[in-house]
Length: 163
Length: 425
Image (cartoon, rainbow over all chains, first blue to last red; front, top):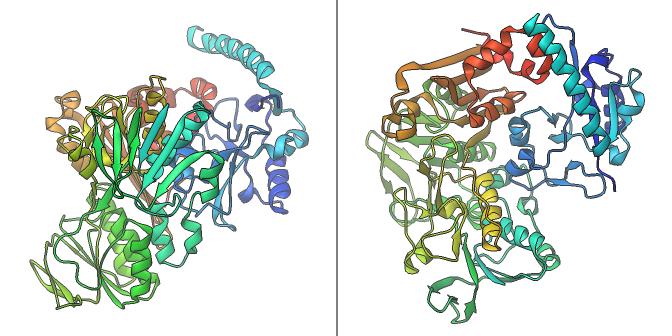
């Protein structure tokens, strides 16, 4: 299967939480922001981007899988997603602590780790976002888009710094 | 290529798995004294506490080994390595030829004195079985590190009256500084677990059965005594083979996990490895280090030179619903760093960022411009990034500059997550 990744656009995000609601709905059958694998981080800074979608980036060398004492996090070869085997997980939260992104969370009802599984290859959050702040793109295209975006950002930083 | 792996812990298994992923032809044989597939020693306290059933401690099944095409010689002890003949000799006299040998012999719990009835350690699954079968009512746990605390909490939940005896003047000496340790101690004492710090265990009392423990200050009665003072690498085979042992008491390995004997690799709890922060060799006996070392050993063994980045420590204990986590070094440990060359002379500005609020607490240990450790109680979110900042050696002054510049922060939104940690003081 073609390798795809979730691409997040903070500048488009309005913080409406629709992605979080649908995420918990499809995974747990209830619309509950506390059970969402994707999260909107509200920054309290004075900058322009105050809502930043955060979700597991399915690392290539994942530290969450590394620290798991039950080997409960492994890659789904179909989708490329790192998936928690809930029957193995003992809920020690070491993966939650270790992930630098906050991509792994704790399912307070099931008592185990939870993280984005890319909905089996067809992420619901992408479909529900009204502002296209999340896209699910093939790695190649993703690379080009982010590079373009990077150049754009660099321009803006120069503007700020050398104004 | 014939590879023999001695030991079936996570290091040995991770080595076998990596070998198989890299080569379908490689002939892999695993020798282990236990007859069961890979299980997680880290969750044994949960098993004792009755939180998970026995079968839940297993990470792999016998079938997994079959699917991977790994020959298993379980229930056998490797007694000898013949370096010139390149063979391993087993306790039943069988010889196994090898092209490469991986030693993953692991560690065992340190136990002093005689093993009276009722005296236990906790390292293997059968140790946990023994403790469960014993069914005592009053326990003394010697050692208040992470494992000691987990055992104490587990026994408490099984209805035991628990007393802890720790030689150092605080609990969790490798994870927390005095302040955090005091809080965790409070959590234990609140439930009626007595904690005696700064007391040395002198001898066990009783005849055939244990009836108590004498420390240098008191006698505590008990019918169950558990040693949790630490783990010691198992070196019998390495010593017999004439492989060099390091100063810290583990097999000495280079960055490629190769021992002093060419073609013989070692990984996991039996080795001493370089710490990612200081570069010094320590016994870093943690699951994730063993996991990674096994993979590195396998890669090198099959001819893909790979360097081990260094060991990292992370302590994570659940104390009656309070999550206690720590990584890196404590301020106490940093104060003892005078001897460590890469850090020498930089001790002038040790600073602490510390904050507590509504039952949560954190402390960051910063030396010069680097974060060297973090201690957290009831905080789990967003500290992974602090860990990576510590490992990477990110400049703290640089971070603070970034935090102050909103325009830059917008370009590094993830830093918003850790900015609050640096706001106090």
